[in-house]
Image (cartoon, rainbow, N blue to C red; front, side, top):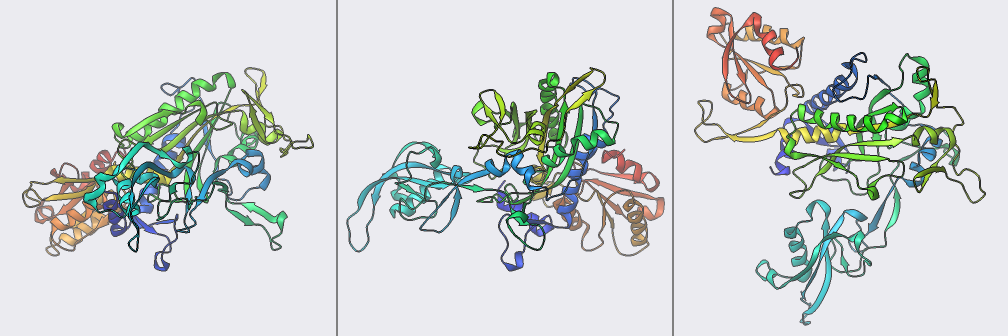
Length: 547
């Protein structure tokens, strides 16, 4: 699948639009259209239902070390600035960036990739060609040899047929692995050595609280939803009857000032997260980590993501965040990535007791295998915690402890993008619906995720068919999202619904008026069966996995 085909369909059919498009757009921000908002809501509803609402704390899940509680929160986007200092975001939440003095563009340091190449650079005004060895680069998602050859042809002034004269050395690698940027040609540059040295770029969006706008009024849009759960842990335990082990879930907006947002909605500056902070006894945390890692992987396959496009990757020790005891990424082979590459869909992190201790004591840093309070030059804590007691007393164990936390953190936008990519299907349709060998484009959404569950058509606009179709539409509308369409040939109406992923179409024809049956058409198999009108809702709920 070509990614531009999916992007075009998303705009044409109302899934996604560029934010502020009539003013030229705003990079890193996306608007969900009428169908997109339904699809994303279905993804979030499925997550909340499967993780929170349907959870039975009296029944032990398969593979779980024991029974547990689940509940939810909805925390504010702007929090006390000290939250981000104690969590480490204020000091550590940054990427390295480089600027190109020639193109005036900015790039994330570890996303620019390239390869060493030697060739003759043709001079201007009759100057002789000069042999040069440079590091030709391109952006990470375009880091194939073909893309690098195009960049090299542009730099050396070669035609396509002359590319064989170039001598390539070594593997494709990130510029962050090089000792110097002196001979690096930036992705949009014509000369080497135009990239600046890397420097830190904090990813949090600043804002101000109140009318004065002074230094004391500075606040931040949250870069993650997790901290709201940590600072409310004691409130949840004190105000409800939940007991550890307990998972506290939240769905909400987060904001990161990405240096180079790209790849459609994969890397955006405003996005929505679906996170669980699971609090458990330290002695059981390793088992709970394995449980959540496997459970979250299986959730994606249960909703239609192909298992051969997914992988569960444990982080190497060098990759782990300073707070992490262990982390696994659930990754998906997005079509905009080079073949064989995967993009992060969800991270499942074993955070130990870092978060609750940080908000009690102050900012923690790792020294060897220990987390210790970070201190300033004066020997005092660099960022003080709240001083509140966030420990938990287990009345069965008769023990007080700081719970360990397992964090399954998923992006609602990335999950929606993955389901869009997986659903995009082109096949041949040698049936009576279409001419022999004609292709059909359709979105093969899992029924739980499909924005529109069914469409109702009168075969023609006469003989009582529209009236009966309208009645059926009104009846079904009470249970799930339905569309009514009476414009154009029925084959074209089928195609319109196929392209937005509607699982079932219901056609009211002359026989329907006579005997009360309708034609039910399956999007994937194209099978058509007759169903009695009074059995239609029950039949659809079964096929849509809603009953």
